[in-house]
Length: 504
Image (cartoon, rainbow, N blue to C red):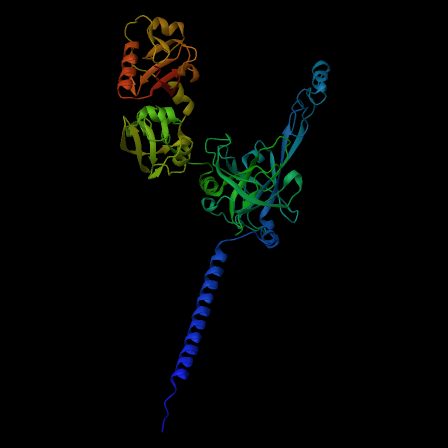
């Protein structure tokens, strides 16, 4: 016969069961939380305990580069130059330089770094400036074995050189990584041959990206504080996965030693150059056929752009891909091949990294509106840019002259350009425009460095041939509440755009 359980005992049992269930739920929740934290920590790396394992794995792939160059008797080689202002300079000028004077040829040596990217084929990458002018190139492995290298090709524009030591060697290679994935603050490791001390490992972080140091037309450097010195040039900058994300190339230093500001060519830029050199012996870059300049705030305002961005087309070469696609001077390239153009420095890289012969969509800002163009890129290496610049220009002959007119709103005195003025100012007689005869002191035109002899070809993208047309264009801009006008100006055969504020 069963007996009923008292009410208070049933309540205690229910409470115990509830506590047990709650405890299990909390334990399950804690376990799940710990699993999530551990998974996240696997992806979010903190400061590593050390770099020993990474260095041990990567060191065999990094090589020293030694070059020899035969110098003439009177030519100074690396490491034997007088400091500027040295009292010995005057002595050598007066009594002759014992280092030169038709003496016997001598050999100059220099050192750098490099790394193996294809062990089977014996392919080594370094900087162009490391091997430039070398008569003999030696690749020195970590075990001090010396191999004679053949130069496969160079690209001075990005300062990259590709060498071959041939097959049949016991080499270790390293892969290129994705430099675009590198974030500011990420750990990096540099290995190289600083000051001749081969196999040197230093570490730091990515300090900045997209640096332009005026080293070349495609500057897009990774900045790092990993100590880099002379001799590190051409060596790899690694991420913590052991992938090359940069080629160490330059430093900023007053003393010549590292002060924590080094620059590396991004791997995504370098890998394409290396591939082309291996395949063709040279680079094959896309070519658009325009001269460009930056878009300042004043220029953006004068064109009706909401922000200063893109690349302003100053000139279009005749019969170039841009010319055939309908580009015009004054266009602002705001998108290229589906990507926004943040500034004028970015456009040359974007074009150069695009396959030759590819047809791409380009968006330009023209006359206050967005327009879509389609252009098929040419090959930069097949273009004689110097000849194009010499042939550039032209236009119909100017009309009759008129007296000097002052356009006070711009602070300029202007005259129509006729044959007599063109001859006196040594201006191409075929040039059609309005010549600047005077610039008012303190005016915005003076601050923008306009000067007598400059020829104004366009105002707000409209051709002008008389001072009256300039004045009318300025008045039109004032009526539209514009604060400035955009002038297309020619000086010494070079054309540029300048935004000048309207006064009064």
